[in-house]
Length: 375
Image 1: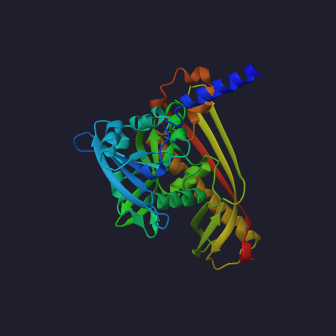
Image 2: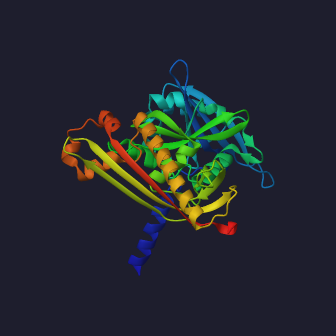
Image 3: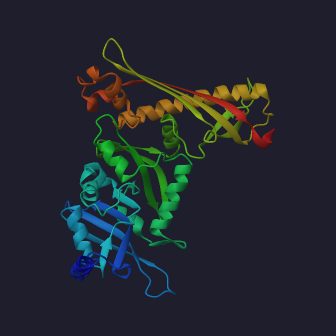
């Protein structure tokens, strides 16, 4: 019994020595950064702009957002200077987006992302990376878009465009950083712009290693997603097609290839001359959503439209492949295939130069499988 009482006394004494939660922070004392932007100033400094969510002062009031900017020699020093301008501490654990201006992206984005990976309190797996054609700080004005805060609006916009197959699959800071470390894989991220008071999607920004190297417009971005063999819930394509053989009667047709499965064949070979050849074939099952032609979509007409669409989309694929090669962006991961299956030849290549010499042979086949209420 005496030993038991002694143990209890020891436990009580040790409990009295505990300090409790020494590192806790109250929400009312924090400013949560939902969106962060980085730009390159004229004198080579880093400018950080952040949208901060301010906790409500009472239960009856709602959260508010504030936009603050600061400049430093590095992203970390700019962030530290930003903290001197606000009341309370700033936490990036709710950060949803990192927006980088094109001039800074052309210099390389590794220093910006490196901060997130060095700080374990910063998220990476769910944070989206966005490029803008001017300064990212331009996107932070106005702070509200309708009734939505800036971060909420961008979040809804990006998710909607991902479902429309403009950006897909979703690239995060985590996946981008891993692609930067992979010599056989580049990446593409959303490319936004400011026109008046409107934030619009221009397409995707292409990267080679950590450097911005080019862009694809909205329609070409959808084709790039399809060439990856990916899609969102919808992938709409609108084309002008001949509606009767031998005549110039043309109609407009909108097809959706996002509702059906995509069949993709992606073969990477090295021929006897050491040249890299890529056969890229897509089989797209299409649902007709709109048709303005004068003829009924019967079987002969559908067969002809299938042929027309296949030829047009094959040409579109050739254009997209030419542009990503021009940007030296191996976003399809041809180099990754070479590393895996032609490693001996890969070790003799300078991929930054040899990628532009790759011979792509795309072929897109379209099959209309549903005409909906048009029939």
